[in-house]
Every structure is written in structure tokens, then in C-alpha cells.
Length: 443
RNA sequence: GACCCUAUCGUCCAGUGGUUAGGACACCGCCCUUUCACGGCGGUGACACGGGUUCGAAUCCCGUUAGGGUCACCA
Picture 1 (cartoon, protein in one colour):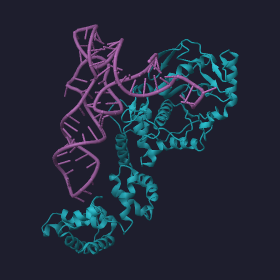
Picture 2 (cartoon, helix red, strand yellow):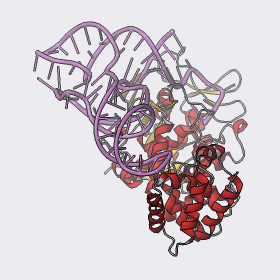
Picture 3 (cartoon, rainbow, N blue to C red):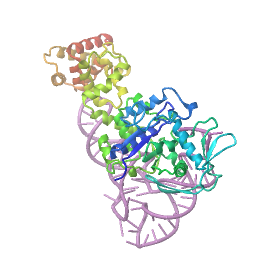
Picture 4 (cartoon, rainbow, N blue to C red):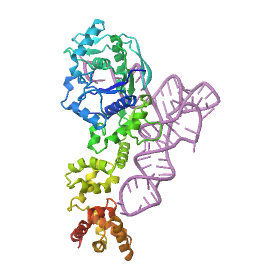
């Protein structure tokens, strides 16, 4: 039996969690959960100049939002810590001395310490890219790497290798941007006489147009999905499908199923272009699959952000039930429900022009109001039957009543099913709103 | 420039020597329908190019081209 899997995500705290980084974390997490191994979070904060306060929190928040929990790391602990590189100085010092004693180091002119490359061919058996041979013999193209600055601080390659060794990392799933760094890391492991982990290099995520995705590009920041009203499960689902698939046609996948099926060897070797439209569609699918309680939980923060006075959860839920199927992003919720909770809802000029100002529209509204005010029962089925009976008497199409009624009670031409909307609004408010409309638009 | 990775519809993903090259997003059309969506049905649309290997290549090999990555006292 092989050793239990220990994988890690090792972000630099830049105050920004890139969607590519999030996917790397996700793949590591999936691999750990699939194998019953450990997922470790390590913060690579060696470069003090770059350090941003609260930057670590952005990373932690992002991972938690995506539902990626770590078994060892910041705020969790573990017996292979500390999990911040800035706190591991004595460990690095020890390994530094070990390399020194082995004669692998020399001091450059400025006082920086360099690792003397063995100048051989390094073979990498990559879990995703296959076997690759790197010829390291030419110092011109592969200069000896610096591992320590004159001020005593450490360089990425060195601490990364030391940490992976010290933390017992068995598999390194990281971005393809590190592929060319890997022979250097392998040389370091060799000099330290430590067996290296297995590496797997994940192709990068590019923009829709194939260019490199930078910070400012749409969808680059994980937090932008939260801000735009995406469900974490939907974003996670989308990320799973970017470079990996269950090998059949399923796309809407529960995370448990992905965990069950996930194999690093099945990760695609080509870079994926990011398609926000597909993510958007998946989000709509996930929202549609939510039950009304879960949808309510997800929607409330967005409703409160717009200061809509919805009363209680009890009064809110019937309204949300009406619009759930219309919603593709949570950010759309306030726009769909505002008029339910505010009698001073505005009228869309275009809707008014198209329906209310049509000849006879107001007369039909009066008729409908009279019909409805005589009703004892107030539910969608009764309202529909009454409206259709009224139309049949004239005779005219039910639509001639439906459209003006919709605009009258909501101010707009787009909305949920009219009869259900009227039911939720209630008899008194519906009649009041029709009166108001009549008063406002009568000649 | 050198080195490395990659190459199937616009995009994501199937397809690992013999398929009418499949599914999804997007797009278009039709149906459903009180609006907007959902949904249903149908359609447009791809193996980058050139050589091999083979009875037979999207699938294997080589080259070209294109895209990406790396060549730091960033991570």
C-alpha cells in the first residue's frame, strides 16, 4: 500500500484569488477527497514587499466560499506547521546548511546565495503531461538559481521544495506555469537526497479569446462570482468541467459525484478558454435545482442589500417562489420583487405606452376590477376563470385583460404568471393598484 | 530568441486505427405560452496544415504553422 496522499495549495497572499488558482485548489482538494488523503493549505508569503494585510483572508474566504476545506493550514492547524512561510525561517536555515555542507551552494558577487546545478538531464514523469526530459547542461539558458537574497530572505524555489519535503507532500498539482521550474525543483530534491513528490501540471485558463487571463479580465477574480450573484456550487461545478470531465455527457454534477470520479490522469492537457456564458447557464441550472428554503437563504442578502422591506421570511417566500424559475443570477432578485413590497412602484414608460395607452385598455381594467371585487375566493385558478369568462362575454382575447392588468399591478410588462402574482399580492392590494393606475392614466 | 507544453464545431467536453465525428453553452428556426423565462423539437457549425506508417487515420510518427508557458535577488 502506498503512503496516504498529501496534497497542498500554496497561494501567495496578493489579496486576490485568481480563478485559475481556485481551480488548482479545487483539483487538489478533489484528489485528496477522492483518495481519502489530506488537503493542506500553505501561505507562501516570503516576499515581504508584496505582502498585503488581509490578503490572506481573501484567499481563505474564497476557498471556503467554494466549499474547499483544508485539513491542515491557517486557522486549522496541523502538526507539520507553521503554515506560513514567513514563520518557517529556522527550518529553511537548517536546509540551507545542509545544502551548504553538501557543497551545493556558492555566494554570488552581491551576497546572494546560488545553487550549483548538477548540469545533467532531468527526467520528469508528470501525472498530466507525461514523461519530459529537460536538458539542464547549458548555464546560459539555465543559470544557477538564487535561493537566498543578500538580506537573508528566501527565494520561492527553495522554500517551496523545503516545505513540500517537510510537510510530506506526496503529489503536487499546480499550474502549467510551473512546468519549466520543475527540473530546478527536482535538482534541489536530489541535492537534499529527498524523494520528490509526483508532479502534475494543470494547463492554464485563458480568456475567451485565447489571451492570457490577467487580474482585470472578466471572471479572473473568484470574488467577482460572489459579487455577481453566482452560487458557489455552480462556480465549482463549472471549474470542475474546465479541463476535466466525467467522460460522459453529464454536466450538472453534484460535488460528491465529481469527488468519486476524479482522477488527475484525466485532466486535459490543453489550456481551457474561459466561457462565462456556460458558467451563467450552469448557475441558472443550480438555482433551478434549489428548494425554496435554500433559494430564500441565498436571496435574502441580495434583497437586504437593496433595502427592500420584505417584512418576514413568511411574507417573502411566496414572492420568491413566483420568480425563482426566472432567475439566473441572485443579483437579479431585487429587480424582480421590488414592486411586491412597495406600493409606490414606478411605471415603465414603454409598458405604459404599449398596453395602458391602447384604446379601451383602461375600460377593460375597470371591468376587470369590478369582476374581481365581486370575488369571494382569491386564488390563481379562480382569477383565471373569472378573467377568461369576462373576456368571453365581450368577446375578446384574454390577453386584452391580462396585459393591462400586469402593468397596472406591477408597473411593467414582464413578470411572473399573472394569476399567481395576483394571488400573492392579495385582493385588497390588487384592487387598490388598479384604482391607482386608473387615476394616474385616465385622460 | 532558446527550451517546454498544446492543437476536434466560436467555446467547454466526448471520441485512444474502421463512428452518418457525439453531447453541452452560445446562435438561428419552430412548438408551448398572458409577458419574460423554463421546457420540447430541429438547424448552422470542427478533426490547423503537409508528409509518412497502415488495407484503413481525428486517433500513431515526423515536420510546419499557430497558441500558451518558462527563461528573476516574483511567487
